Length: 232
Image (cartoon, rainbow, N blue to C red; front, side, top):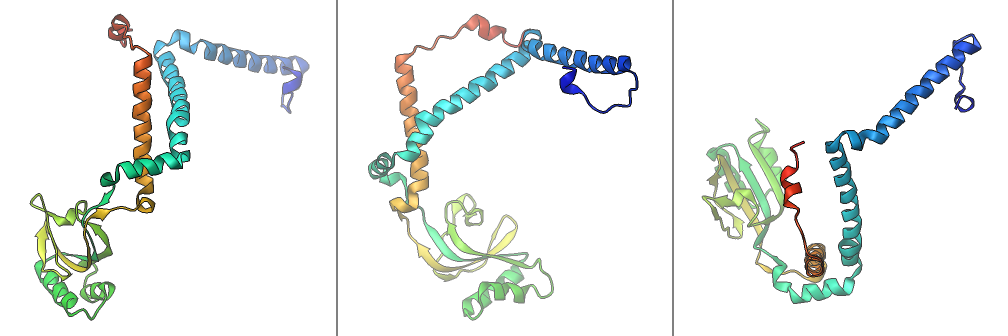
C-alpha cells in the first residue's frame, strides 16, 4: 500500500511520512469494512439494495421476454394490428387555426378578419396585437376533437363547421376557430399506427407471459414476515 500510494508531501521525516500514509491506510480499511457491514447493521438499507437488485433483474427479464421480442417480431406486430384494427382509429380531427382572445371584442374582430379570408393566421394575429401582444394568440395545426381542452365546453365536445366559426367562451377565454378541413374518424393505416400497435403488442406479450408464470408457479405469501415489515 505504501509503495502504491507515494506522493509529494510536506512531511519531512521518514517517520512522519510513514505515519501519515498509515493513517490514510487505516481510514481506508475502516471505510471498506463499514461498507461491507452496512447490510448487516442496517436492515432498511439491505431491503433497499435487495429491491434495487431485484429491479435490475426484472428489467433484464422484461427486456428479453417482452420489449426486445415485441420490437423484433414484425410479423407478430402486423398480425396483432390486423386482428385489432378497430382499436387503432383516428377520432374526429380538424385542420385549422384556433385563436384565443382576451375579450369578446377582440374575438369578434378576429372572426370578421378570418371570415374575409384575406389574411393568414399570423397576419391576423399581428394586426390584432399592434397595441398589445397579449390580445390574441393563434395555433395552427391538426386538432384532436377529443383531447383539445378548448373544444370541451360544459363537459361536451363542441363541433365546428368548415370555415370561420363564431366566437365562443370557454374557461374565461374567447375562442375563434377557423376550420380549413374536417377530418372524419377513420381506421389508422399500419404505417400510421405502428408505434401504438407495438406498445399494445408489448402489453399483450407481458400479459401472456404473466399468465404463463402464474400457471407454472404458485405464489405463496408469508404473512408473518409481511406484517412484520417496518416494525424493526
